[in-house]
Length: 143
Image (cartoon, rainbow, N blue to C red; front, side, top):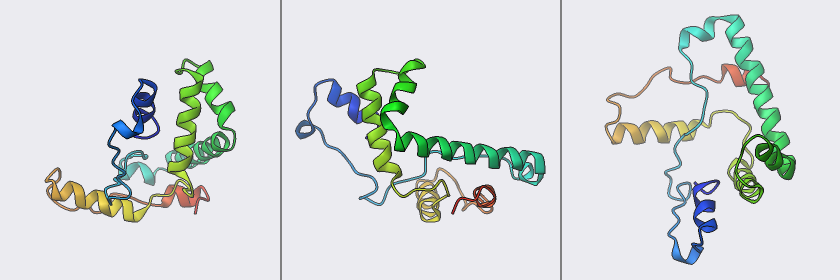
C-alpha cells in the first residue's frame, strides 16, 4: 500500500533500504480492491441505475480533479479532518502513480486474476458468473 502504509513507515523513520517492498503488480498479484457492488436486480431499476451513473461520473470527475490539483486536494482532506498536509500530498502522488491511465472501468484481466486467486485459495468454491458488468461505466461514458 504505497499510498498509505509505506509513507507512514517512512515518516516513522524507516528508510527504503531497511524495508522490503513487494510490488504486487510486478508479481502478477494485483488483485481488485475498490469497486461498486450492487445486487443484480437493482440494475434493472432505471432510477437506481441513473443514480449509479451520476455517482460514477461525479466520482471520476472528482478523482481527475484531485489528480490534476494534488496540492489543493491534499489541503481539502486536511481541512476536513485528514492527517498532516505532507502525508496527504505524498498519498496523492502515490495514488496518481497507481491510477495512471485508469478510467474507472473494470479491468477484466484484474477481475480474472482476482477470481482465480480466490478460487485457488478456496475462498470461494466455484467460479462466479454474472459477477460484473460494464453497464454503469458504459452509460457514464467511460471507456
